[in-house]
Length: 110
Ligand code: FES
Image (cartoon, rainbow, N blue to C red; front, side):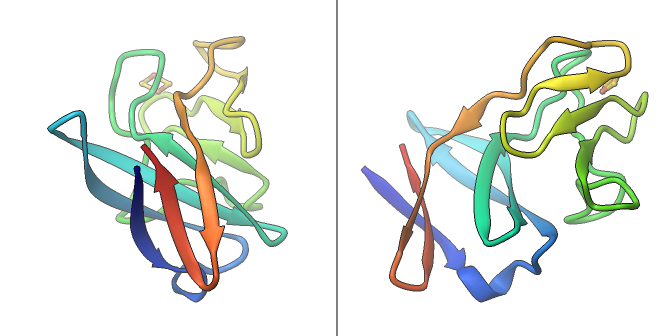
């Protein structure tokens, strides 16, 4: 099943945005990163403590917009794989959700 999140133009490149979506009948917080024309979606849950990652609404990236950054203890994650490369949960990964670009829509495959 696919779930339409937004238009591709709704998220800056590079940029990020959060959404609330129903997955398996539960409302979950997720976020999408747009980088170099590609889109990546993850559950908004840091593998360190389970905290939400953003430091301000829709702000999931570090200052250089090269990595995903957790606001709580500054863990850094690869945008394309969700792997933590620095911080207290190195080697752990964010939980990814498959993204489909359909015409101008960003959709989740859930
Ligand atoms: S909660 Fe994310 S690094 Fe600690």
